[in-house]
Image (cartoon, rainbow, N blue to C red; front, side, top):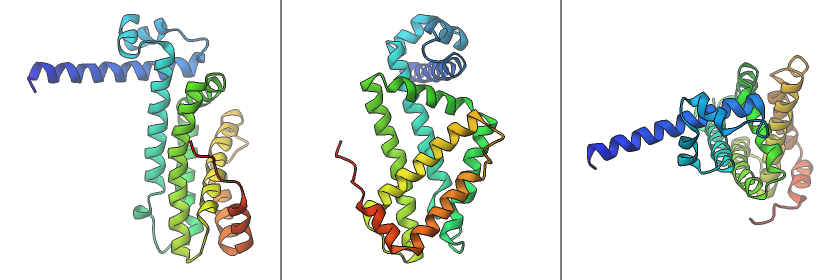
Length: 225
């Protein structure tokens, strides 16, 4: 590829990244309804024309932000719950503790990315295209927790129906998002260790009780997309 063409691609990627970073700050600060593309452009040091050139509309910019956030969360959760990095000698119920504590701690230190997610979630309830994209991103995040459940069950020597792993993942995802929202609303009322402790209690209950595993497995599976 000619050097000039490569340079233009690099500049385009850098500009896009700056615009996305500015949009995240502006939307987290003002909310999606209250933010304007002029503010996003000014925060990034560009004109509004640059925003349109890269994204075409405010809605497309929001979709791009959603993809960036979910991709980051998936990568983070993969790292936190990567079986290869976990101590195989530790009981399976201990494994969520450090990763969950780390996630909640980062939420307290830098809440804006999660605030942005909440803003995106709220807006997506009124926009079908965005809601569908959000659901797809959550599916990918859910798959991370499914794999964690499968690996933990295998290490514990527990036979668990595949559908139970899906519901375990739904529960863990719901706990993560719900406790994250509570943490934002009441930082002092939600200990950062709570998510990991509850996850470990759930794992111990499922490993100890075949009946509990069957109850989860009997719940309706998600409908095909």
